[in-house]
Image 1: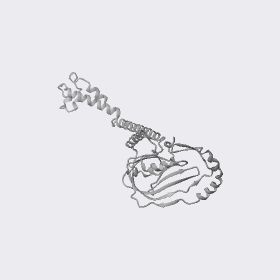
Image 2: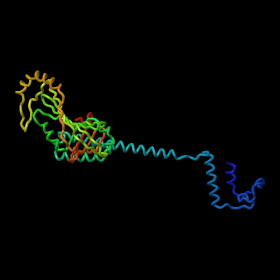
Image 3: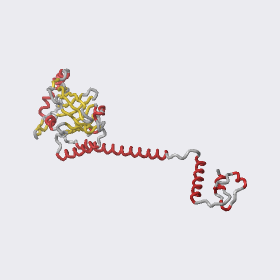
Image 4: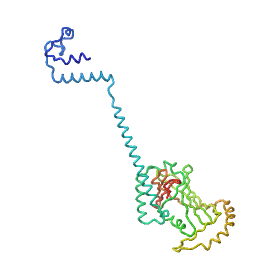
Length: 318
């Protein structure tokens, strides 16, 4: 190959071909006895042919592949996508934290000011726009478990929440437990007082109606068995209707009934909870507009909003 390359570099017009080249066909333009000046096009073609031949000689029969660069480009795209996903997850977490912090002092929405409600609505709207689970009913395992009500705009719950403002009575927790395998929902409210704790629950069935919507039909109500405390805990004072009431004089009376309360506690705690049927009802629907492993936002048929936090989530921490 190198011999051909050197030969092509010889000026044709100033050198005669060796006698042994006569064995080649005399009609060939390159080996004509009459010197001809090659045209520029033929020189360019010859040059290209020599470079291509040299490339073949250097790399062998296989040409250099650009797959590595394409693969590198694809890997870069994956890295960019992963970085964008991480940034999105960080933004969602910050929004969730701000939302959870905005619930402080609102008593699940009962005592929220108009400014706080507006802030909460804005944060909820931003989270709904970033919903990582656009079809919650297609991801039923995420719905499973116990969810703690952190905030609601549903006015129907406000009378219940206001019970916690009565003397010695407190609403400890409002929760919703979902079993997606059996399509059941249990709503529960836990009350506590100085002598006992109890709960009020409703059991319901749900049906999937759309990627985001479920229809709920209530079946029965359950009044939990009161759990009498062995030790009576009486605060020194309580606030009722704006008045501060001193309970110190009553401490002696409460201490004298502690033994009686202990025996009553054992008797009552052994009784089953009281169940009652809920009359015919049309049920209600619930639209889940945001869902991940620790936060759920739902909207009811009355236009109200419910924000639930999964039991055990750090978002429940004060």
